[in-house]
Image 1 (cartoon, rainbow, N blue to C red):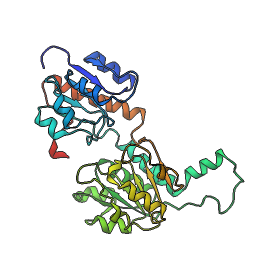
Image 2 (tube, helix red, strand yellow):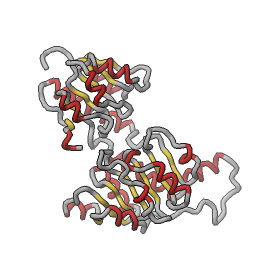
Image 3 (cartoon, rainbow, N blue to C red):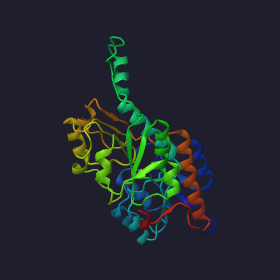
Image 4 (cartoon, helix red, strand yellow):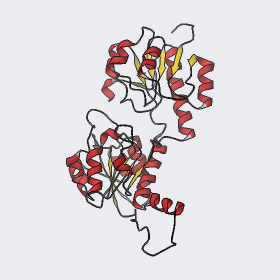
Length: 326
């Protein structure tokens, strides 16, 4: 890329150590105050920068990419998911896209287990009682269900799905999974997981469903109204992946009708809270906290920097995303 420093625009505030390193290496424009860029601000930035560092809240569609200036050659996404970026259009325009895979695997898997516990053991209801009027302990108060012995069905057995499986075994859960491709026998044995070729059959037999697949055109509403009706009335569904994988309206109807026992959602279909979900006592909602650890956020920033630095040195970014991967 020559000797001149790249102009890098970062769309959201990042950990200070990451911002400091970016400033040392590049001509960087940081986001202050920390608020999502408007579409107009994104278009303006993409019209003049060499590298854009967006996050999940920035929808980089074909229209915006079409307005990009000739200097923009890399979109170095801060995060693993790239469903908010039109990777194919970017590639057609000669713009590379990179992401930060693998960094938040353990953090997200921890959150999936936390949500399973929160829903099955009614933790939010207990917390609410302690902030209000608690009448004292009783044998029948806040009865939940035991995790051990339940069947967990993992939808999507990539890095995060496998990390969930390893944790689940420690809680005594029986691990099952559905994936586009069956795991290699040695990996399957290591996580002690049973493969289901049919998602319908797996869903109908599980006590807990954990959504751990990425959002792609093929996984949009994978858990649709028909599939949600296959769940046992005692089943719980947990999602730490992307809200779009579940038909949220159908899920809400099922929960309200008592056809699904509970849900733990760290992600929402439209990025906004559905008030009808909010009012249900058997639903635990979190504000996309799955990857929100200090360590994870710093490591994500380090990956972004490595991708930009490698690109600046004239090489392929190590975490380049190509359309065929999606």
